[in-house]
Image 1 (cartoon, rainbow, N blue to C red):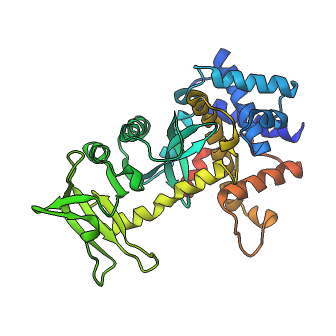
Image 2: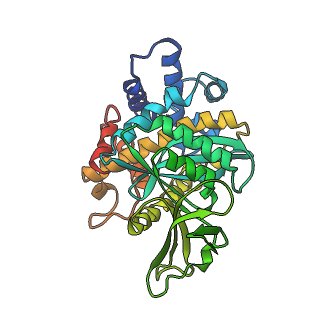
Length: 364
């Protein structure tokens, strides 16, 4: 059995077990095509279909494999709800706390597309939960798209979980943040220094808040002057490691807790770098239609979760000492997972028969 086919077999078995019922017919056929696509992405470290097709385990000619992937991305039945939601649901179940920190951020992908991702904070990175793709170029998205992604996220997250939303200055829209509060969830979002606020009948700009000799200062029950109804804490935070103060809006009562969570916002950057220049090069996929890019992300996000899983597996079972350094490990979970997969395939070692996403529970 070839290295690539052993990798494909594990992926295909895992996908079948995530289905609520035994797959058959078209569902089984789509699952198999998805497994080949994930297999090719992992083995090639690319999302460009010709390169993916050249590395997947399918016995057909590369041109036939590429055509098969192209048909899959065009197929309206290849949906997030059917093929990625099981991943997201298991990842959220692995969060044993009542609170789940979720980061929103956007980036350019493919040919003239922009992706907006909701990522579950996991250690120093984010695991993709849901996303949306639109035509556009680099820059801030409209607030209505933030609200649309928020609604998608609510459909995924169990009712017993409280979301702690984390976002940069793009996500400080009063209507968007009001939607989060209205659903009884929490937020910490960066805002601009010239944002006009009012508190206790006083109007001020965020830059007017002064930390003095302290690390932070806040104005409780503050409201934006324009944009919609929103009551929150306006916070200025100036850590000694920062050149300039950071201005935040939050509905958390404890400001130190808000600062603790906001530090985790940057974990989304590792997801984008792993999907792009350090990993799958999804920005060079040449796909220009948003609906097809959304479907490609189903496979790319699943491939990402598989690789992180193997990084966790290697760390928990001490394999990192065999493939990296004995005294310490400088690799992130993504790079460690990639090297562990290469090690297993290169040494013809046994690959776990299927993915056990519950392993994330031990490390959250």
